[in-house]
Amino acid sequence: MNVRRCLLAWLATLLSLPAFAGPALELAPGVRSVALSPHLSYHHDRQASDRPVDAWRRVADGGFEPLPDGKDAFGFQRGAFWFHATIVNHAPDESRWLLVQEYPLSDRLEIYLRYPDGRVVEYVGGDHVPFSERAVRYRHPNFFVDLPAGTPVELLLRVKSESSMQVPLQLYTQAAFTEVSRDAQLAIGLYYGILLALFFYNLVLWISLRDASYFWYLCHITAFGLVLFTLNGLGFEYLWPRSPWLADHMVPISICLALVAMLQFARIFLELPDRAPRLNAGTVALIAFFVVFGVASVWLPYRISTPVASRAVLLGVLWIVLATLYVLRRGYTPARLLLLAWSMFLLGTAIFTLLAFGVLPKNFATEYGVQIGSALEMLLLSVALGYRYAQLRNENQRITAEANRRLERSVAERTRELQKALSQLEETHERLQDSSRRDALTGLYNRSYFHEGFERLLSRCRQARRPLSLLMVDLDHFKSINDRYGHLVGDDCLRWAAQRIGRTLRPHDALLARFGGEEFVVVLPDHDLRSAVAVAEEVRRSLVAEACESQGVRLRVSASIGVHTIAPDAADDIDDALDTADKALYAAKANGRDCVRTSITAA
Image 1: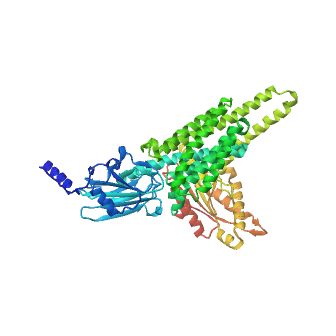
Image 2: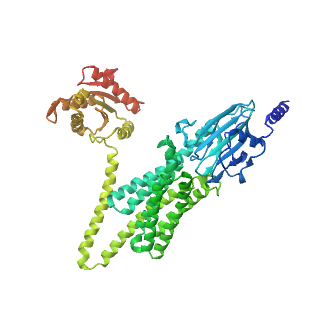
Image 3: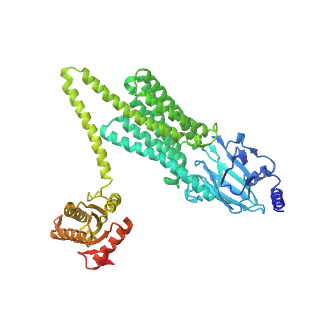
């Protein structure tokens, strides 16, 4: 009997579909996402003159065709494209779905949902509509659509764009979209994490070595990162969410910037001015062309500048490959890695360009081919720079071995300078690591590093079954110092207080950090409450023992201190300990300031 009822319900659903509708997309229970491309029919409105009523009429008259070979990418096309599908939702628990256009550069999308009762719901999206109007804050245009269970709903979509015509539509349940978007953002985050790591690593090398190759490599990473930031829709999401003009024109402009940096990097790395003067002249000419075209892209129509810039990427990379092959044949061995790097980039760029022109279907490999290729290219370029630098060092050693006695002194001097540069590079790296842990004003550890150090000391004390104490130190009436004497004097007071506290704590193996504003925090390993209170009193007395002098002003500085001790078997974590010590600090302030209070007395 139940089977018979299900068959009758299914037949009633089919009979309720409009006579002109093609095979409907059936959303079965349990389906969490589905691609619309296999279920779409389309019409190319070359004059972009059809209205929705005209499109509905064409659907009824059979004027829509299935997607060619099921592909949803048409390349750069004029006019507008209309797409149609009929959707029947058989999942009673999922009536609200998210429709996502998984291509971020479409200019304008107009969606019309027609229900059996004749009601039509309209939505508008694309990067010519402010980003804030999207249903979900996400780089791809998206719309919440209501699909009542068992009800056939007709979807009509109009897309007009001067970018590549790609319409990879996807329906998601809200839970499924959350998972997909999380994974996509993770992949993008990993890619930009690689770029940032390479950028800062080579930035340090450039600062230390002043090699022009590293500078242009940094420019290449930055410019190409901007290209992909734009192509992935992240620029419209984060940088220019209210500027359709920038959403359009930053594509060709960023491509031109990236090509200029790529060509100049290759020119310096391959030493073209010396090794291949003619190729060098051609490279300079290409750089000049991309500079001019990048400026012209500000005024050129988007439908002209973007296809030209997309094709120019292949031209620029092919030119670099040819130059690399020429220099490699003449015995310049660092060009091997450069050739491999540009080959990876060329492959990824070719895949992306062929996708933009509708030659290749849209899938993970084609959609993210340029990211994969560029990540490999930039990693290999970084290795190539290191290899080139190592080869130069080996060449210096060879010259040293072959040089006569008159040149031995100068060669030895150059070797010492090179060693000094490497030492400075290592020291710079260590200083950068240390500076990230330090407060810029006082030189003490910052709040972030304090959390790491506290966890480490707490774990050690618990393993050794020893207590650990926490001091919260707050300078009294500090706001009045800033208000009366100015922030420069206030800063001097903070530095002075940090030095006094640091000197007092030096014998106690304490961890001292600036916690924020005029507040400091101290961790005392192996100190019970009594010894911690004694140390706190030392700190308090050291501050009031002398006046702080700044800009001719002598100021008496005191502090209120809260003390809390964590027993070895206590379950306190860092937040609990800080909260308890903070309460003790407030008890000290409530008792007239310039005193020490413990968590026991505060309670």
